[in-house]
Length: 389
Image (cartoon, rainbow, N blue to C red; front, side):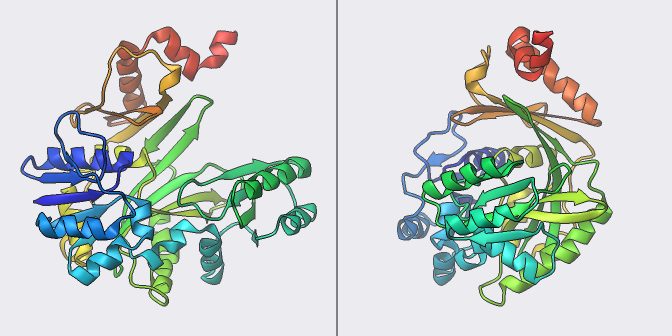
């Protein structure tokens, strides 16, 4: 199959490599200037917001299927334009995707649908936001509204720190912010695939932030099947139904950042597609033909051919390290479907290992890292307190 991936982010390159490993007969093109080191894909030098040029490329090169990972392409209407031309594409329509790009829209819809979310306020004037926090309880979370380029959210425990944070966000070309109550507990991430009619859970993740590294574990032991079904019925389907009232159906991936407090789940954020680094964890566990899954979803026959998503019985343990912090013995990016996945972006190296238990996956990964990064340097990043002692 001739496949175009509209995107230049890490997810686009990782997806291209994975699809090529799934079927070496795929002819894959990616809209990026960065060449594949192992000929997984062919570069197509078209800007992500140049939708008409992407359409022309698909038409004249007889591309059979397009997958959009680029948020810029989606918000600029790549799915809308492809629908006019009759080209199959895995991507939500631009109006439907707005709920994933604007915090203010997401919060209003969650409130309207009575989907649990922290108490919030939306402000387009700095003085009104500051007046609001004078009367609220701390801690609070302050977020930017348009999340297309970056999601900014900061926790503040005092009025003075929150005031300075609000001023900085408004100074940073933001004309609207969201302030919400802080809820205790760990953050969890759940991903679903939908053709607009039906939705199927993909995976749950938990993420831990360190000073110089981040770890991701999947699936989360703390997210039961009962919780996933509850979120699907009480959050995902109401969201999809509401979107159809003002836009075309949402076709693609939806991610939710949630917290669970006193047996109640709260939706904090809504994502379009996998956040960077989460896709790597998911595909390391996937047993399904990913290309077919995406193609069936794009053609609105998701549950006709897939009752659930097949993943291994393993756990995945992933670590994200800042390249500036490490001296590695091994250069380059590797995609190894049997043992490890290693891939890098401009700033980070991401390592993922799988095993039947979380501890075994972690041990496996750290044994590998010790052979590729000096043990002294690794310990200084992961266990900085040991150095002080």
